[in-house]
Image 1 (cartoon, rainbow, N blue to C red):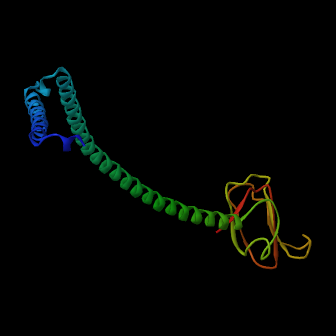
Image 2: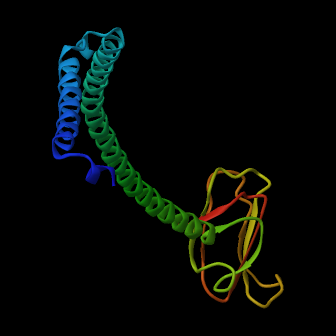
Image 3: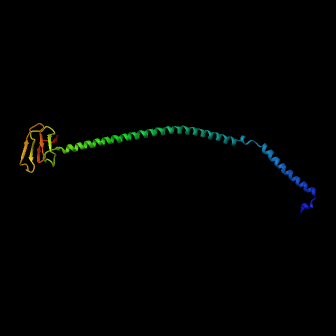
Length: 192
């Protein structure tokens, strides 16, 4: 309502005054912004710039160490892989050796069992049941107390087919089915 009452020139003056004030404020703000000191020249900026350079240097050092360690890691991994391959090869060689030893043990065990089956010590043995028929020889020298006898089976020792007290040497005896063999103090006898 006041504006309607005022004459036209006063209205223009107010508007011109307000516009001039706004332009002046904007101009002063722009000039003062340009005239302010450079932020890069401040002490805080210099401290931050120094810290940034130090951090960049630390990063470059770490990156160089990483590259060096990565290269070393690769060579160590290659060395470990070579050692693992060598251990696998050694393991395979050991398996082969173990199999060979097992085969030899089985052969020796078989030979030992055969020898045990064909070895006679003190006692009375029935040929064909306790021992196999064939020629037997004493394993070592016998003394004067050695006695052996070949008996007809089932005679309970009454039917002596052959006997001896050799008194030394390595006696030999041939046995067939239907016979018993009695030996005392002669050591062991081995089938030939």
